[in-house]
Image 1 (cartoon, helix red, strand yellow):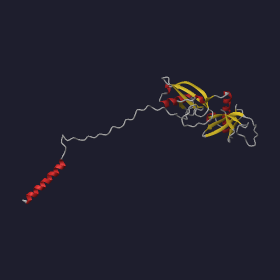
Image 2 (spheres, rainbow, N blue to C red):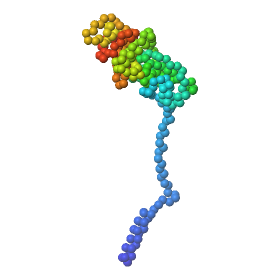
Image 3 (cartoon, rainbow, N blue to C red):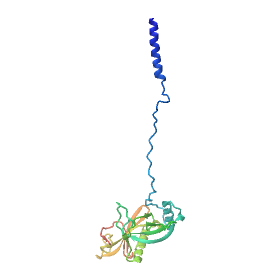
Length: 244
């Protein structure tokens, strides 16, 4: 009798354990379905206006056209040259100053080039004189533009400065580029670059301070207004007043 009772208890325990292990929900038991949350969709943005590109390979208008077309996502043939003119700006912004940027307050010769695409939209391109870099100008400031009083004399002064450096370095014209030109009133006839024991006439002398580049070096050249007196100045004096 005792064995029968124990067998019954053991059988009950086994049945309970089996029920716990093998229980599965039936068709009427609701299941909790989970799915990943939808990812937020990024807003569709328009292509940004190209930042002012810079290249060292531009030497001609043809090179410039190719570079600008590539920057705008066009074929070269999609752009038409409308005009190109030689301009001088009052600082190194090329008449296209950017917010929070600082520029050299020197007369900067260069080019304003206008291209148009197939729809007729025009693009205002600014470059320094040597076309070593360019800016696609959106917010032009043409009040920053200036013109030399005597273009012929100004050109003579630039040429004289380049020739003086060519002779000093024994290099070709192609090895020299013009960085900037600043119209200056020198305080004496030595053009702000007096030599040892040199006697200078104390007269105001109009001229230019011209920065030239050859290789990785920059050179300062002082001239009078026509370029008839030109000095490659190794130790420039701070005695020139910039013209307004």
